[in-house]
Length: 284
Image (cartoon, rainbow, N blue to C red; front, side):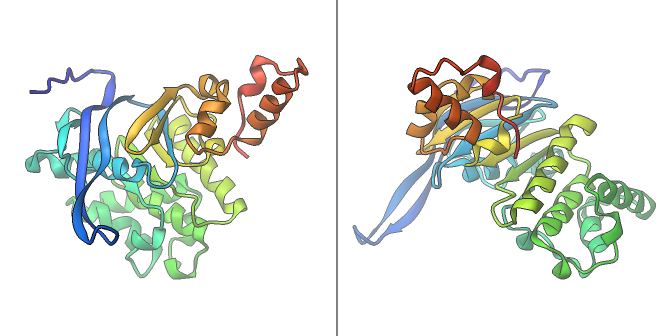
């Protein structure tokens, strides 16, 4: 039996999480069991910005779905806002607490116009119409998309679509938003604008942000980082702490931010120019 002490400070507590699924192996010509998440534990405090990093196939996106109660654990336990993700009767309340923004916004947008899409979540929660109108207005203002309220989502850019997807989650007023590689399909300028909007969720609204990515520079201002590889947590710490061990990040198949790579190169050349503060890389 696994016992988890539900902290008053932690919004999310994960203990000994295990997730397995069956897949067909062409090489072996049989169905095999694959372990996507292998006995991991972590905790996330309310109001924190936490980055979860990993190469493709590391298990980070599977973890995102677990935290949003879209998948059930094969073993271990997850508490979101004190609720157990394995309990069917708590699933709806968990999804109200922790919203998920997918990598591809086209998989999340379903309305003919933007305001319909943003209203979809609150409508399904049974929110009164007047309250929904106010939530739409607030959510679009938060992402800078007010001017596109009557627009068709199909006419928007990738970055704009992702902001609408975020607006739809915001309209449900969750305590936490999980972003699963949200910049993967957008251009550099849209990426910069989107990152600013996401960081503002923490700075201005104190929303807990869980940001899944394989780009270190996108989470350089996070409160805490977890690095995953082959379903396990291999590194954890603040950005400043992890950026001081660049060789470990590279071992986990992560590309170093320019500033960190530069400092690491200078140190290896014994230049003596690298100062502690230079490790605080900025979002580019």
